[in-house]
Length: 306
Image (spheres, rainbow, N blue to C red):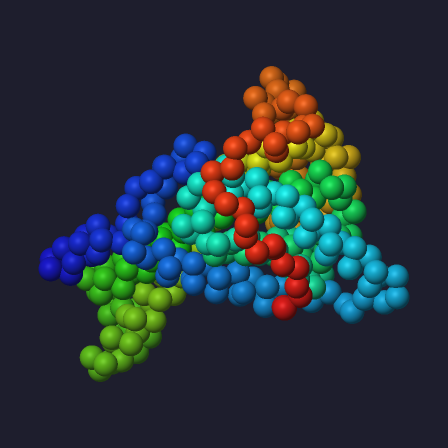
């Protein structure tokens, strides 16, 4: 019973309810643990990159196309980052700038971390996206960061890990597992088995919960992305048309491209209704936005470290 009470106390300490910028209720870690969240999400992002297939080395004209793509990411990313810092006054308290990285990965995809890092896979270039569609890809990934989705995922993982490490020994699951695998075990081996089962259960449980949250997070990120694009001067219907024009060419087997296709359909449906409030002539739109902080920040980076 004391272990269950300890679990409840730990859950109270490490969690807090928050409302995302999109109005969704989130389970978040308190501010004191946000640094841990940034480190954990950075590690998770690196794990995704390490396990993704590398792109072959470029040849001749392909190298020039790669460099041109890098420069487009830099230009679009800086434009979006400046607007995002204007829109969200709390961003400088979370990270000093967005960092945009192009990773030499074969498939189309994107990743990010709570520290403000946005990674675009080299395979995205081969989709031949126009600027508006490519800006949407960047903006959607940026808004996973802005909306606190990485912090939410880290908190979910911590909660599931705590529950597994405390509840499984209470329920004696490790001992039951040991009994089925050996006639007799020592106390030490039973404890080791319990710990191993708890670790596997916590990893699997966290992945399941995060997978369940993913569709809601994607919808929230894409809606916020469209508002960010409108504030940065893009026309929402132009973004939608460019995405729709490219949709049939997207490979169906990849999870990331499947998400992009679903986003395209939802945005097309949204653009059939009333225009966004931000859908105004884009000429001079940035000059109409009063900056909430000094934007004398280092520029985003484009690099290939993976």
